[in-house]
Image 1: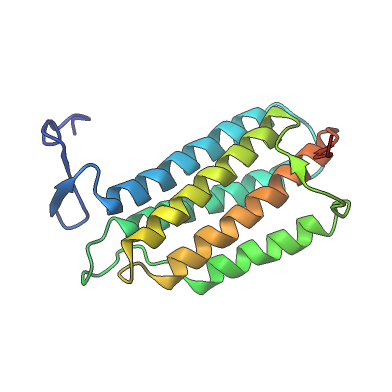
Image 2 (image 1 turned 90 degrees about the vertical axis):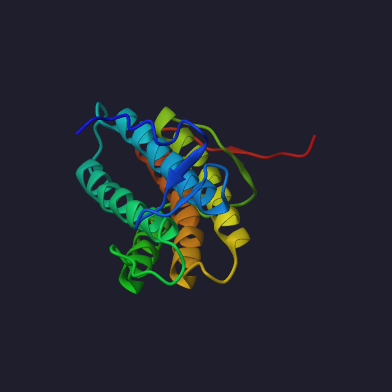
Length: 183
């Protein structure tokens, strides 16, 4: 299978089931932003690979599942309205995120003020991934009622999780949080 097809050379791309849309279509923007977030998560994980902390394997496994689920979210967004979704998002994926949020957040110091995205390169990159997921969520909302409520809920919860994950990774890798202080 060739990587290039030349079918997109005039600014269109295929959705699942083959219908063609412009590359700036709202669906393409939404699933493309999910792909961007997934790639940024991969960058964060590359920073974790050579680090050592007790929960490292648990963190890597959790993110492997999240990256897989994010592909399913993209698949739902790339499926035209009225067509069957091949990799349907389940409520259990949102519950898994909520459980991780609760588990990791319980190990963090309570927030006293806003924090600045920073810290270890892995933690800082997870903050970037969080903002990309927020953009994916905004893109998905702009599509309207054809977007599954589970997709919107998952993206919302994923951004919450990435905030907690960035803090958790920073803590485990010995990085202090920088609070926002009024001058």
